[in-house]
Length: 245
Image (cartoon, rainbow, N blue to C red; front, side, top):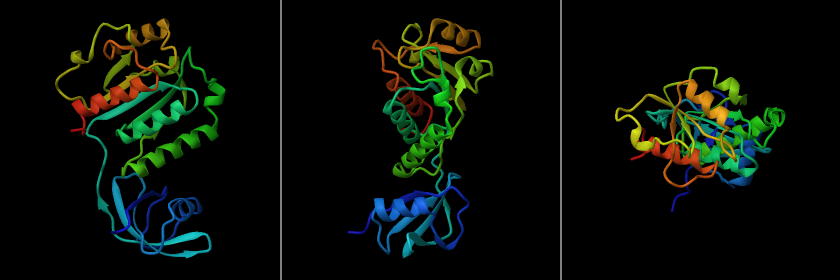
């Protein structure tokens, strides 16, 4: 039985030929995945191309790989979905990032809203943003994706709502009467989805969104948790308009 293929992200343009992988990628390949000489790899940098490679040696702590010409295997969905969601506490937020990447989200816009349980100052730390980026990279590696979602900087919800949304703009709340069946039959090119934190969006925030042209929707008769609602909506949109099935 052959060794399973490893899918690995590199941030820079990927050259053809022999290359020493950066320290972080080498550590992940050699120490975490325990790859050995002859291991087949695919490398990607987020542009829709995939580079076949083989581990041919180790120099010090760095992995030496031989990289072949790339082929296009673009995993981007035909439906561009932007998830705009206030930060969640702890690993709930990490889980949302991971699952959104697996489901082919195009962009993630972190927000700070009235009921957010994470302070805006804490949310805007560079260390946090870098960690979130690493979560998306690992999710893309595990799901064999060749694209990475764009991770925007954290914005206050009030500021976010001042700019026109891209494409069909949907805000989710269990108090809205309209259901998923009210969405248009013809597939949009872009959909922007706004969801709430633990405790939901405040009444004035929902009013601001409605005044800015956002369509209010509820997801069925049950109230979904803050980390469940955006992923359920993303799966539904990809199934109806995108590339799931």
